[in-house]
Length: 391
Image (cartoon, rainbow, N blue to C red; front, side, top):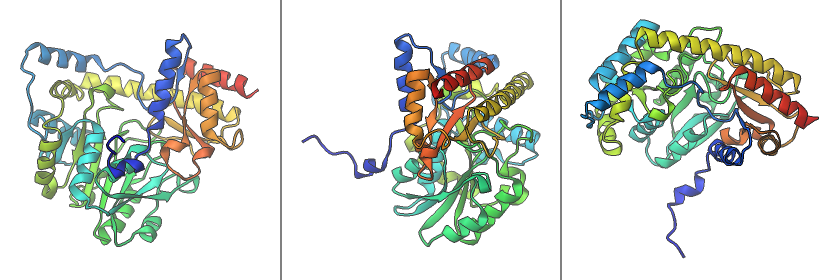
């Protein structure tokens, strides 16, 4: 018998969207044309100023470790961005640059969670969250959410679910997979509930900047929350800034947690990617931000094309996405098994989507996540392929 893996691995499910992406690549290698609407990755290239900054830095040859918390210049640039765009005063010392937002989530959970403690998570939510909780010997506890609350947990729901074992609450705005937002008042109410119980609030703002018809925002723009010693904020250069493969994110921590996070970062990562950090220094230049805003406008146009086209095909979209780049569609009028439908779509129609199975246990077979990370003409072509498949 081969050596057994750690028992926790029995609780770690595959990341189904990555399995679907692998299958899509196999079909493409066979000559099939696949329209990608499964992966949460902008289709735009990394902005040229970032490429140029990284190229200049690498050409100098001094590609060494940075401090574990990240380049001081980058931490200062992020702090300025919070102030200039959102009016939020965040000290650079509280900003920890990480290997992707996943690294930020890992640090926040590892520094705060004892074995057996639980985190409350909305269901549906980003699939890796519950597995990261499990990897630090915590327990993820799902809060079923639906269209009645725009797929976001309420303060009342959190208060009712809280137990002596609960360590904190994780929320996302904009949300993956639903694209919904939490209003400032809702975030304040959620923090009041967690604070009153001695818990933590972790806010995922990975899709910050990608909002439509409403200004982008941050929980840190609320002075009372920005100063809270029980609030963690996760962000990323992957989505709005278009740097997915560079694997760079950041974590905003209360001042009292910084040293503890630094110790963990030293051991887990040594430091984030040095070339990626130098590329990110160019992310906040006016020319780069103008380009990124133009890309946000394009995502809005894609959403406005895709949502009515899907509704015409029988997909239920009761809550339109106002952020990120996903539609979380109810397919119960078309099938009783979204996973089987996703398999048919990729194999027979060449359209890659993600079944709700990835995002939790609350009615997953009724839902597909469909990403509008493709050109408008390709989105409409995908809808025509789906129309043909459905007959």
